[in-house]
Structure formats: structure tokens, C-alpha cells
View 1 (tube, helix red, strand yellow):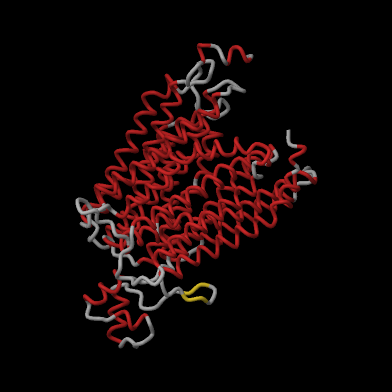
View 2 (spheres, one colour; view 1 turned 45 degrees about the vertical axis):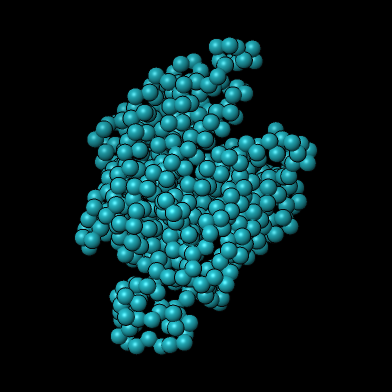
Length: 546
């Protein structure tokens, strides 16, 4: 197809299939981010998990969410096709939300609520693995090769992600995060209904509108796939087995032995061994692959701090942020929507800025270092907001809002740039494997996010809970008093922490020190990345990139 055909009046605007994918992705993101916004609050306020356990559980859940697309993408490419994978994955996620609805309806039922909770999240993990990697890959296939509308199409699709990411926490927050533990169920129900809407949109409109430029439906099963792979019974049995595996792995990591960190490290080392032992790779290709591994390492530090949004920052919004506007109290979970709102607001500005800079535009590694610096700046901002402030005092919302604004600017410097860098530098034969490295880095970052969130210092909620049990927690935390054996037994029974956590020998005694930990972590990572940027640029060999 020549350039005149691409720009002909018949092809002006965008194919209707783009808006079908936009709607499907919007409802799925509504489902995911809406549930994520209230997850740690449900764990601590309804299931009565302590913050450390809830944080680690959150990290394991979001980590597995990034791991399963590696399996779902493989199955779609070889057996099911994108369409079937999206629909099956969406239905399993909706089922997960409905199981969580029943869990929240019976949250005080002991063993039953625990079983339903792990089952619901396990189903979400399994379903996400088949949905996430398949829908975005269809966007580019809607257009002829070389069509200039493709970049704009991805921008529109990205807006769908963030519209869902903004609406989910707002609606689920107002429905479920009311202060009454019984209301959490409505947030899970809203997420499940949203996911079903996404599946219905896909079922009704995919065949007619999600088509290639020559009118053929996209995302169908590969021609070489065996007809037996389309057997509904085998699909149901396969997804049931995969879901059971995810539920089991999630439960084992949370309750028996935390193996996920070791699995992630072993996976990266195994992939590195496979790639670098390949004798067909030349020197330049190996150097470019080295850049991908180095950049992926720094990405771990970014996302582990950024993903505090679903854990420790939700605790902070709940307990230490003044949310009462007089006429309404803003649910803590709604602050999770700020990132998506800021992405929609700031993305055009950053796109304009990179074009405006022209030849002065920073290199990709430099942009990523800037992203880490802005992340550190965001935590420095909120650290100043809580400096010398008692845990019983609530601070202005401006500290949280300002931090999210700076974090979003950092995300826009790092996230799309890093993904583009992997696509640009990866040799064709290892493109999928190196994309797996990127997913593994995100999975590791989310696991680390949960571990770091577990360092959140005991605050007003724990002091009040201890006081209700007749224990003065403050002097115990400050090592000014030694709890009696009876008090210790009560604190352990009520899952109230009675000492501050430490990291690398440093004790986290206050929220100021907790936030400064992320300033130091992201700041050092940023400085190191700035220092090695020129070396990375040489290793990228941009002069010979086609």
C-alpha cells in the first residue's frame, strides 16, 4: 500500500476497532486499579491483617500480576490467539472479583474468608496473565504498515488505560471505602461488573470492528494450532488448573515460604545465561543487551518506590492526611486516581517538550535518570510535610497531591522511554526473551515494594488499638518502657507491632525517616545512572541502529 492510499480520505480518522479496544482496556483498568486502591485497606480493616503482612501480601500479588503475562502471551501466540485469550482472561478476572465480593460479604468468617480471599486474588493473577499482554498488541495491527496514525492510536489507547485508572479508584473508593468494613464488598462488585462490561464489549464488537486493513478479524487462533486447543472443555480445564496453580503459589509465598524473590532472581540469571551464551551474537548486540539488563536493574528502584501508592501511601492517606473538606470526607483510596489524572494532564506536555528540545533532547538513559530524580524529589517533598509532626496530627492533602504530581512526571520520563529502549535494542531473535526481562524487573520491583512498605512505622491506628486493649504503646515503641508478658501476649494476639523496623542497620522511627529512605534509594540510583549515561550511550551504538 503506497503513501497516497494511506492518506486517502477513506482512511482519515481511526478505525472503529481502536475504540472497541479502548473501551475494553478502560473497563479492565477500572477493575484492576479500583480493586488495588482498596486492597490493603480491606486487608487491615476487614480481615484484620497487620500492615506488614498486608504489605508483603500486596507485593506478592502485584509481582505475580507482572509474571503471568509471560505465560499468557506464550499461550496466545501458539494456541489461542489474542481474542480468545482476552475474553477468557477477562472472565477469570471478573470471577476473581465476585469471589472477593463473597469474601468481603463474609469477612469475619475466619477460615472461609481467608480461603475466598486467596482464591479471588489467585483468579485475578491468572486472568490478568491472559488479558494484559494480548490487547495492546492488537492496536498496531489495525493499521497498514507505515501508517502515520499508529502513534496517535497508541496515545488514544493509553488515554483509555488512564481513564479507567482514574475512574476505578474514585468509584470503588466511594462505594467501598466508607469506614464501614461491610461496604468493601461493593467495591469488589463494581470491579467485577466493570470487567464483565469489558468482556461484553469485546464479544459483541471484536469480529466486526477489530479487523486488519484488509477487513480480516484480528487476534484469531494461529492456523498451525491444533483444533483441540479451541475445545471449550479443555480451555476451562486448562484455566482451572492454571488458576489453581496461581492460588497455590500465592498462598505458599504469603503463608509458608516466601520464594518469589528467589524465583525472580533465578529467572533473570537463567535468561542472562541463555542470551549471553549464544555464540551467534556479535559484540554490538551483546553490548546493547547489556544496556537492557542495566536499565532493567535501575527500573526496580523506581517502581519499588512508585508502587508504594497501593500500600504505604494508602496507609498514609488513611491515617495522616486531612481529608475532611467540611461537606465531604474524601476516601483514602481515591488518592490512587491522582497518578492517572496527572498522566492524562502531563503526557501532552512531555511529548511537546521532547520535540521542542530537538537535538538537545536527552538520551534515553538520561531521561530515566531524570525520572528517578523526580521520584526522589517527590518523596523529599512529602518528607518535609511530615517532619517534626506527631503521628496523631493529620497533614494537608497538598503534600500527597504534590508528591503524586512529581512521581507522575518521573513516570513519564522513565516508563515509556524504557519500554521503547528494549524494543529498539533487542536483537530480533531475543525480542520476546528480553521483554520478559522487562516484565521480571517490574515483578521484582513490586515484590520489593511490598517488603519496603512493611517497614511503615506504627502510628495512630496501632496506638489507639493498643489503648483499647489497655496498653500504652508509645513508651514501648520508644524503648522507655518494657511490656509485661501479659501485654506482649495481647499485642501479638491483636497483631500490633511493638517495635520499629530496621533496614541495613538503620531503624525507621518515624514517617519522616520512612520517606527519606526512598529519597536516598531513588536519589543514589539516579546519580549512578547519570554517571554512567555516556557509557550506556556508547554501548547502545546508536550510529548503527537501522
